[in-house]
Structure formats: C-alpha cells, structure tokens
Length: 162
Length: 129
Image 1 (cartoon, rainbow over the protein chains, first blue to last red):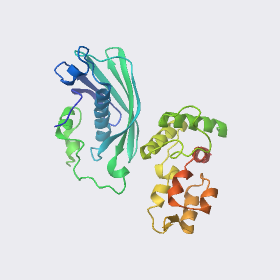
Image 2: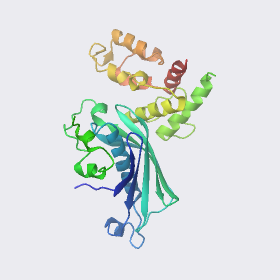
Image 3: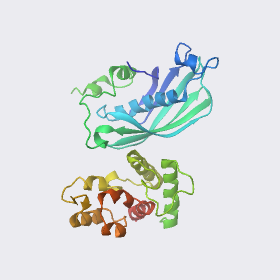
Image 4: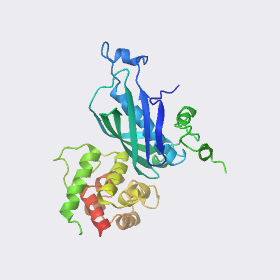
C-alpha cells in the first residue's frame, strides 16, 4: 500500500511546473487524533503531498528513468491550518535539475490564501550514492502514481515505444 | 562589471546560510563546510544549485567538489594517504583549494577539511574571470 497525498493534477508542464489538488476530509482517520476536537492536516503530510507533486514532476522530466527520492527539505514555512472540507492546491516548479539531483520550489494555496511555502531537493539515487546497489525496477514510480498523470503526459513517451 | 571578492564572499555567505540553515555569524572564511558548518552530501548539490542561480553560471558538481571521484582511483591513494601523484592531480583539478596544510599530512580523512568557505569563494572568483 502507498499513501497518496494528492487527488489529481490540474496542470502539468513537463520539465517545468505542476499543479495538483487535494481535498481534505474527516474520513482521513489520522485527523481524528490530530487533534481530538480540532482536526488539522499535519504539516508533515503537506510536505509529503508537495514531495509527491514535485517528485512526479522531476521524475517525468527525465522520463521516469531515475529513482527520485526526497533528500532534503530546503524550506517549509506554514502560515495557516488546513481543516477538513478544505481544498488545497499545490504549485511546484523545478528550479534546477542535474543528472544527480533536482531542486524545486513550491507553495500551497487554499483559494487566495497562502498556506505554505515548501522548497525541496530530490536525489536521483542511482547517480548519487556510490557503492550502493538499488533494484533495477523503479520502485518509486508505481502504477498508482502514473495513473495520476493520465491525460497529462503522452502515454507513449512513458513506455518508450518507437 | 566584475564582482569584487568582497561581493562574492557576501553572496557565498548568503548561499551557505540558506543552504545549511546557519546563523549569520557562523560563516567565516576558514570554516570547513562539513566539519564546521555541518554540510552533508546532498547539501553540496544544494550549494551548487544555489551558486549557479546566484552567480548565473553553470557548475558541474565534479568541478567544485572533485575529490569524491579522485579518491576512488587507487593510483592516487595509498594506505589511507593521498600519493604524490594524487596530490598533483588534486592541485590541478582544484586550483581554488589551499593545499598548504594538507600536503604535510595528506590523510584521506582530512580531505573534507579542504572544502572551506574560502575555497568556494576562490572557485567563483576563477569562474567569473
């Protein structure tokens, strides 16, 4: 099983930027404990949602050939709580991308309200951690992630058919 | 107009403060990135990305921090020390680095100490020439 913290993409500009959406609902069980009587979306999960948005963006930019792993939170500042019933929009942009790594900047909005600013760094682990071997298959980008991109990215380019 | 060394230093200082989450007074010219400022491997890439943006230059990572590739070559390392040949290659590939202290005792464990704030400033200065 894998926790997916975005519901869908709204925009996807290959190699440049992506916008995703998440609906927050009281059906998410962790909100009952975080906190009892005052449910708010945990900030760490907002970081994870941004990491998924930006990580898919970085992975697609290199045709999902890299295993893209969140390596560093460069910045995470939160301005408001996110409550059940809220829809948050995650904007991610690639700042730099190189064979070994990528950096992204991003913000989370609720309507016109700025909720958070989150900048991340991703490592392309096969090119970056010498001496360690990783499985051949790309365990980062599973079918569940790919299905989020349906309609945004040319299917042919993903499967490398002629 | 060319940037003065002081301007470059100020900009590098800002990059390091942002990349490593430092306080304003922690960066000194002699500070080592790993030992004194707590940089880890992914931070080096972060620093490279931020320098590229700040100074509008392209920096292949192995140019600024080439030691990683060099120490995997057995010709350059013998019994935990950098060989004379290795030292020559290091000096050639890292003209921005001060080897004066290192040459006396070229222990590979001390390679990390070569990456100082000054070496980054030197690198940018050479790059902008």
